[in-house]
Length: 220
Image (cartoon, rainbow, N blue to C red; front, side, top):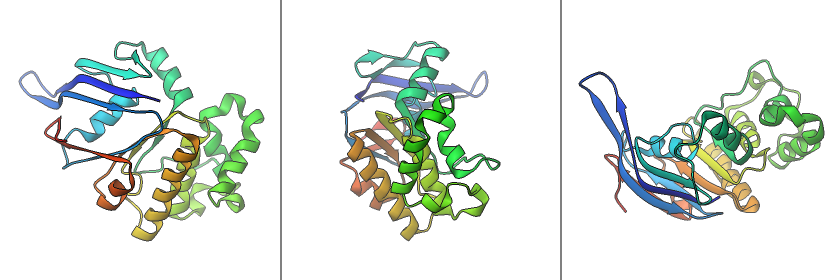
C-alpha cells in the first residue's frame, strides 16, 4: 500500500484554553513494499502519524492518502472495513485475549471466515516457530512468544500495510531482535508496506528508510 501525508495536522483540545498540536503540517510519501522507521523524542508526533496511517484517528487539517485515495473524511464504517481488510497492527503490548488460545487469537481478525483460513493460520504460526503452542493460552507463553502471536494476528489477513508501535519495547534485546527480524522478513516476503515507530536505533537501522520527527514536524 502507498501511504501519503499531505500537509497533515492534528490538534488535540484538552480544554477550552489548552490545545496540543501533535502534527504541524506533515508531508511525506511511503511506497508499496517499503519499510520505514519513524524516530524522534517522546511527544514528537510519531504515534499520531501512525494512527493517521492506520485510520485510527482523523486529521484536523490536510489529508491522508492510501493507494491514492484521500481517506481523511471517510465514514467510520468505511475506515473500519479498510482496517480490517488491508491493515495489520502490532503494538508494544501484545493485547492477546487471555481466555482464547494462540490459534483463536490469531483468527480473531478473520473470525467470520475462520473455518476457511484455519490452515493458513496454522502455517503462519508454524513459520514463526509456534507450531507446538497452538492450543496454549497467552499466560502459558513467554513474552517473545506472545509478541510472535501478535505478529501472526497482524499478518493473517494478508494486509498490504503493517503498522508497528514500539513492537519490541517490552522484550529483552535477544528476543526483541528475533521478533524484529521476523517482522521485517515477513513483511518483505509479502511485499507489505511496514511503518514502525521506535526509540530503538538498532531496529530503525534495519528499515529501508528513517523518518525523523520533532515537535510535530518531519526533520529529514
